[in-house]
Image (cartoon, rainbow, N blue to C red):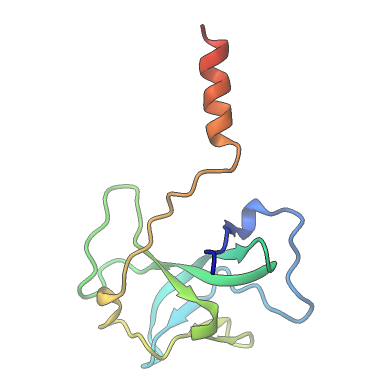
Length: 130
């Protein structure tokens, strides 16, 4: 099975959420104890299936076991949409497998994806600069 091609929702201006599906960006992410440990920063969409697969979560600073990020950076994790419960009334995302005390053992996410045309734009810039 091939890995999905993922894109940030903000990079897909024509993508529309399914009717009735909430957009949880900006919502608090709460662990099994109900305490918040982050905020949904972005949604990652599978281009082939046109479905949201992951929530890109920005962690709160100072969580136990989470290294202090570099200046002007933040610490983020990816949560599979299938592993969370969305509470539209409370504008919260619940993930019972994690808590403020255990999220430090969860793998961090580094958003290193380049826009699709970035490499071609760099090549064009070098060609015209000669």
